[in-house]
Structure formats: C-alpha cells, structure tokens
Image (tube, rainbow, N blue to C red):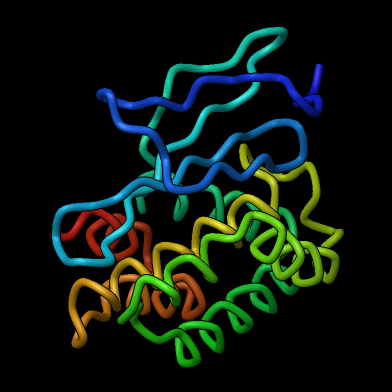
Length: 181
C-alpha cells in the first residue's frame, strides 16, 4: 500500500500541524514543523510504512542516518563515497533561511522531491541497501543542513559527520560525531 492522492495519513504531532508534508517512495511521509530555536527553525518528523500500517511519528536522528550510510558503504563503497561527495558539495552550497519566503520556497514538496529525485537517480546501486531509501536520506540530509545553518551560522556538526564517513573513520569517531559527543 502506498500513499494515494486524497489519503489522509495524520502527521499532527503534539497538536502541531506540519508546515509541509512530503511523501517519499510510498514508504515514508516526512512532516516539517516550525521549530523553536530561531525564527525559521524547522523540525523533521516522519512515519514509515511497516507492512500495511504506518509507524508512529518519529524524529530522524543523525545516528540513524549515519548507520544507514555505513550499511550502504559496506555494500557499495564507491557509490556511497560518491553520494557523500555530493552531500559535502551540497553542504558548501547550503545557506540559512532568513525570510519566510525562503522557508516557503524550501518547503515546497514538489520542489523538494524534484531536487531529490534528480540526485537520488545517480545512486541506483544503493537501492535496497540499508533501512532507508537514498531519496529519503538525501531529503533528510538537505533539510538537516538547512536546519543546522539556520540555527547557527557557524554550525558544522553535520559536515563533520559527512567528512568522517567519507574518510572511513573508525566506528567510534562516527558514532561520537553523530551523537554530539
């Protein structure tokens, strides 16, 4: 079962309606919410298809993202390194949100999916590797980068995680970076 037009999968979280809802591959629904750390802070929540049902609303964690990239790297090291290079390039191009108009443009589900679809198509060897789809990982990464840079102009934690994964650092360094230690 996938998300059908007109199908209502609730993404209300703690009484808050999302700013945007993005269905991904019929397997995920990403809700983007107003955060509290800055005027244009965003929070990410998702639901995942589990058999015929949808999971509870979850928050994507850096460690989940990193573990999935490690699984993909184990299966397809070269392809995963190419994806990490692309994400590091995206990091350099990412700018903080400074206006409501910029936030609205970023959160357009059609634009987000078009950008992610084009990028994910380059990494078809990673399909079926790990828990998350490449499309979902790229979408989460893109939004985490914007979130981090919007809340702190000098932020670099996600970039450090990408670099440690790309450099094939030991598992302890990667986990430490992904869990903010």
